Length: 600
Image (tube, rainbow, N blue to C red; front, side):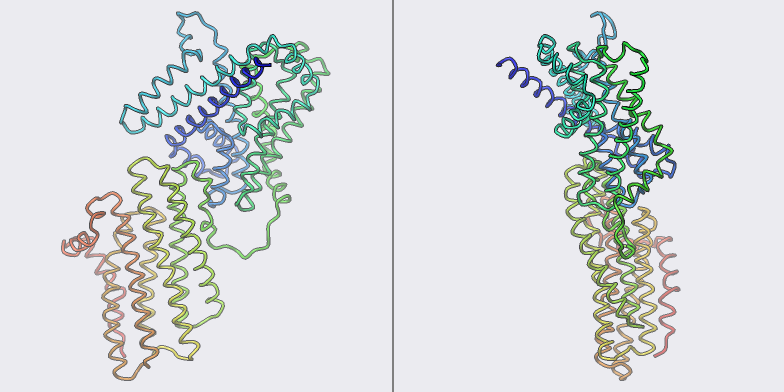
């Protein structure tokens, strides 16, 4: 009894090391290859075959099919991927997860002590990887060395755990009870499938379960007729985990991705079980079924199973998409103009580089939504609409919700970024979110002013309305520049913001003087005059927020701008910079001169 308890403790300890090693190695690979993940997933084309390849490569990089699918779900919510692309990635993720088992098969290497192959045996490779990893992680300060060190440490811990599991199960070869249990499950393939499924759900890692099978193969009593159905059960087990993740706080397409993963692996299991049963009854390779397997055979079967399943079902990708849409039906909803405002899914945090990229993309969409809302609100002064008023308040609420979500998302992301460049980008985004939110707030301010005039049956004078139209166009133009600068991460576009902001300041000063004159002459009433002055103030403040965003963008890579925006702007105004002066003159001709020509 005591021996069984000790064996269980050693086995569980080895499993814990194996799982922790995978986690460390995966973290190092994700952080070191963030740009690759972004390129592979973020720029995926409509080609299904390329999608399968992408899913395979990304899963091979981050060593987890579940992590790949979770990241895919986040990108679906962000609007970067559609459901058809996600299905192809799911197929590839199943193939990519077999890389871990192929690495573990290094256990099978046999060599004499003086052979070069001895370096690739786990009992040599694990301590060597640990030594290299700790040196790179703790003592080398070069960029990227920490990530490489984490990969080496994870690799070493993974193999140390695997060897511990192998050592723990060696006595089982002499246990008649264990041999009888293996024989029992070997005769009942459906029960083996169920066992693999349940254990995978408990352990939450298909790679770990296959690793346990490979460790057990060292006992010399694990047969092929036990292994092949259990591997199918392991593949089904990992679907349960991803389906649960896909169903929590996600949109319809994300849930459908989880459904596709289950359907894909279930169909693959059914087809393979039918095929394997027919082969066995036909006497194909009669000595295969009861043969003892090693870790290499286990790894190869897992790879063959997932590869053939993907090849067979690849032509039916469209059918899988349609089936998932029938299972998870769409709710009748109003069309969403800005789906990216719901895109900062915390599942993206599994890859900081992708999360940071999506945060920038979502901020640009937030800025566009705020700009559209401001333009709609300014139009309320000219022709008031209750329907437009509802739209303005609805999208303002969404902007506020997004700002709250973005703050939480970016704070959590701060804990995962490591490079100075990413920290600067993240700092810029955190400061830009409240600036854009304030722009959105001005839309409701304009709406309230317009409603006040509408309710009282008042309107601006013809000249005041024309002036407001020109100033409003200038403000919408500077908001457009800001959106384009954020969307394209374009600092040249950001530099065009300040000249227009200076022109808007001059326009506001001119209009305040002219409106004061109108009030004195009795052309405008006091009520309309106060609203007009408030509108000018808020339009100027909206332009000021655009200037602040531009300074934040330019300051990311310029310490002088970051330290003192005002000094930079003063120097810019006094420098006589030709591009700045040309843009300034162009904007004066576009907006200020027509304003000066208006008679009142």
